[in-house]
Structures are given as structure tokens and as C-alpha cells.
Length: 308
Image 1 (cartoon, rainbow, N blue to C red):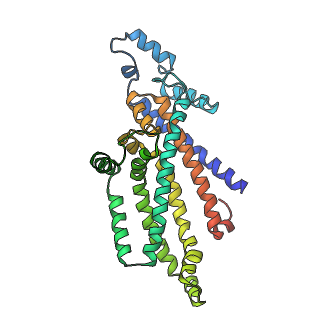
Image 2: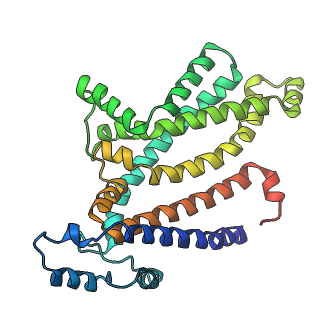
């Protein structure tokens, strides 16, 4: 087990390095940061001093080399806008994004997996057609449009829930449901197709031939095997929730990392954007590592393979 964890962490190093290179170069090419952070009447001497103070007067490869050297020492740089360590700024917003993503993940799994199982067991029933129709709708509607529609109906029209902000359970409902919808639809569809495949296997027919109750056959023999591919998808999408919450956070004014990244891009606050991207990339690595471990637990054939 330790060798698997170590192998996955070593394999993640090139990916994290690639993220820093691509993000650093793109951000450096996006424009002159002094145009946004310094007053319009600032002289060229003041602008030159600002660039010199932050090392922006050096060639991009030299800037990246200095950034990487500091990064290896745990220094993510200073925020241009906040005049504080970039990592500190990101970590302040991270709990809000984790809270939103965790709530969305719980909502999606709590609804999607039972719905997918029931749809497969009761194939071609009214429930199956209705749930799969909603799944298709959930995957077709853009997140930002769904968020605005939910604000219009539940906040503006019915006055049941607050429009924006963070701090209460009621404020969490609309953004978490909006963020969960796409994952919910995806997991429900995959669970249904996985269950249909498993239920047609010989060992399921054997279990039924032994006289086991249908509930036992479904819960004990079918669900566990059907969930193996779902674990991989959920793991990848859970990382995507962290990185893809930008639109949802923007629509509901949720004070998380997504909103911070959007604000920092507009301000060309490169250190904060890079720190946020690296944190999300690290989250992807850790979640995928967890998925690999769960995959081995759920499928004994994976444990039997030599690790590559």
C-alpha cells in the first residue's frame, strides 16, 4: 500500500510542474499588472520600481525559475492586490469552497445512486423514464443559467431562500444544489447503466437460482460491483467541483476560491491565481490517490494486479 501511495505521488510531480509552467506563462502574457494596480497618473519611474520590486522586469524564464525556487521552500509569493502572502489569501477562502463542494457532493450522491439503482431494477417503469428525463435535463442546462433560475424562483418569487452570501444553512442550499446538479445527473446515468450490466451477469442469475431474495441479490451482489466505475468518475468530478465552482460562486456571491480567482484574474494578481491553481491541482492528486485506494478495496482483481 505504501508503495502505491509513493508511486502515485511521484507520478503527480510532472503534472504539478506542468500546471505551474502553463499557468505562469499565460498569466505573464495577459498584460501589464501596473495598469490595474497603480493609479493612472503614476509615473514611469514608479511603475519601473513596482516591476523591479516584484521581479517583473526579468525575462519570463528567469521569473519562473525564481518562482519555482521559492515555491519549493513553501513561498507562494506576495499578492499584488492584498500585499500579503498569496497562500494566506487563498487559504482564507478555501473553507468556503470546501463547504460548498462537500455539500454539492453529498446532495449528488445521496440522490443519484439510489435513483440509478431503482431505475435499473425497475427498468422501463414510470420512475425510470421520469428520472432519466430529469437526468438528461440536468446535464443539458448550463450551471450559471440554472443558478439564476433558482434565484428567480426560490429567492425572488417565493421568498423561501436568500439570494447570496455565506453563514447560514439556508444560504448554502441554492448554490450547493446548483453545483450538484450536473454531477447528480452524470452519476445517476452511470449507476443505472452499471447496474443493468451487472444484473445481466451469470453470477447474478446464479444468486437468483439459489433462491436469494431480489433485495439481497441487488444490495449484496450487484450494487458493490456496479459502483466500482462510479468511484473513479466521482473522484475525478469531486476535484472538478473544487476547480469548477467559479460560475456558481460568482452567481451566488459565495466568498470562496472561485470568486477569489475570478477577482484576481481581473486584477492580474498572478501570485494569488497561481497559488489557487496549485492548491486545486494538489486536491486533484490527493482525490485521485483516494480513488485508487477505494478502487482496490471495491474490486479484488485490482489488488491482485502488479502496480504500474
